Length: 135
Figure 1: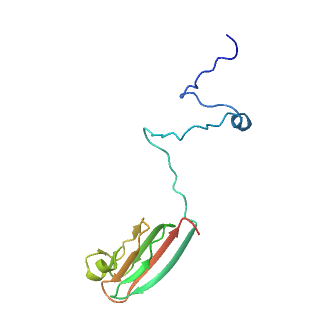
Figure 2: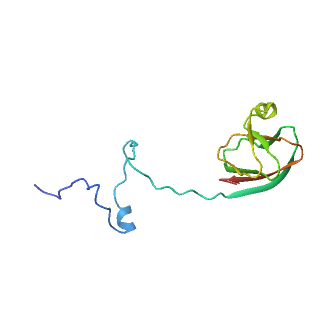
Figure 3: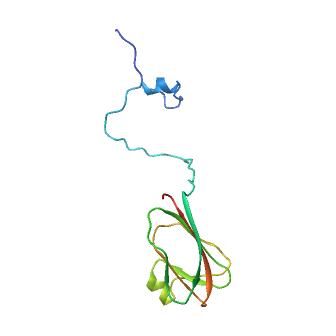
């Protein structure tokens, strides 16, 4: 028997070596391998790259607050004095079947769909902060 004995690495043992040594290992040329993780995974929330902050004077007519945007991380809505209606359908907001959000409580929206709003009482000031993942 000649040559070194090759064995599979023990998955419990950490891979050791400096970067140059590790980069010399052979690259996998086979098909993609499905990996299913069993147990908790550490994740880190990335900060937004851009944020736009503005205040709007809402009327009782429905307004588009933020269109559908795949770059959007979040929208924060806050009305100081009066409740407002908010939803992702202009018809629902106009018809009063959308969510009626109370004044003084921030609404943190974490989806990329369009957002519409209207005041429950004319003259409501709505603060809007839109955070974007990308420029």
